[in-house]
Length: 372
Image (cartoon, rainbow, N blue to C red; front, top):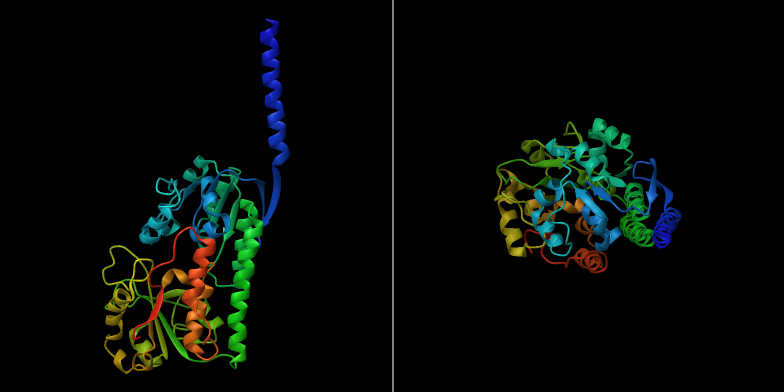
């Protein structure tokens, strides 16, 4: 009996020591998110739910960071860009079977599913956070802290804050700071080159989402995403003043009347969109140009400066709201200020980013001119 008592005592004692050790390592960390909220989180985190910005999370947290992810909004990745999702699934073992927490755009984001997964933190996109007041209150009431991430607004401060917030939560602050510094350097380099070239180009630029084909006028953007990016680069955005919100279609006649100097049609690797402009990992230049050509043949477009001057371009839509969107800035700026960006190679920059920060290899076509 004494022997049994001693064994039980040692077992309990070991348990208390282990508990004390774990409590000693646990700490309450304050994180400032993209919109300036101060969020208190118990770190190190062991369970993470992720609503958006999957590639940014990967760059900061590393492939190993995914071992802590217990749920994602699958539609914005697997549904919107399945080619990219498939590539990441090949190198992230738990991604293919990852539980789905729903998506605000589809109206099925589920606070109940998030709570059931018992994450230590939920990373959520700013636009989802704003649209789900009831759900976020339920999640926070369950003791789950929410960290807002925002790369859509195309504001330098939010890019940097989002990157640093992910790093602090995931315990990868040094890597996050390296990425934030890289982004800030490339962003400011673009602006410095523009300033040296004499400032704003004042060229008229039209961007359209090339998802449904040339017979359908796709969304353009004002004040956010492509719209904010164009303004930052000193271009005149054709969509400004013509939309009732941050995005939507611009009247076809209005585009012709404005006679843009440059046109960018945003493509991607969408599924079930046979007429879409095709860009991304599996797109060759020939595939991209073949899908882009019908846009230049729209009624009335033959007389546009952009079409006549060979300034119709395809560009990956996913490049307008990421930690590597400085690549898109470089590409568009190179068309606006050719001399100032003569020595800048956006494709090489994107290839380098992949090699250093992403677990998938660079390939495909992400941005190119219709006519070589």
